Length: 158
Ligand SMILES: [Zn+2]
Image 1: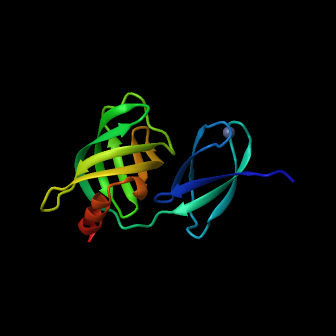
Image 2 (image 1 turned 135 degrees about the vertical axis):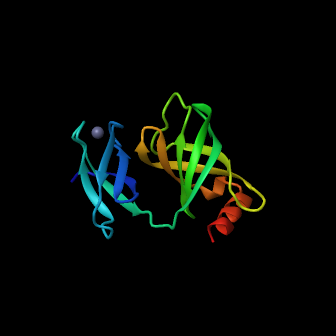
């Protein structure tokens, strides 16, 4: 019996975007059943089979249009528009990045929210979904984010 590699994928509006754990090719798929938590997948490129653990994102999302800065260890700093925020993460579109971000990559992002104080939010996120080549869904990594920022997001979402 061979051990299958396991990989986590985030289901965003019924869609997933995951990188093959063996060859690294990106794959897009749809998940219609929101009670499905695990699925066996075969990579279309290298034909390797692996297990996909599905995590359904079902947070309430609040829309925003905020220009921010993304800081990436390997690709430098660039501009992004934050489009929505939930208690679990954000959606943002990069407007001037030369190299595209990848699934699983972690970046720091700074932007302002439209609360009374126009608070500056500074959070670390991990890319978990690709809407297009330059628009991403990302989850908060709260242990590396400012706790003040996480608190402010919590209040803003109420
Ligand atoms: Zn593959």
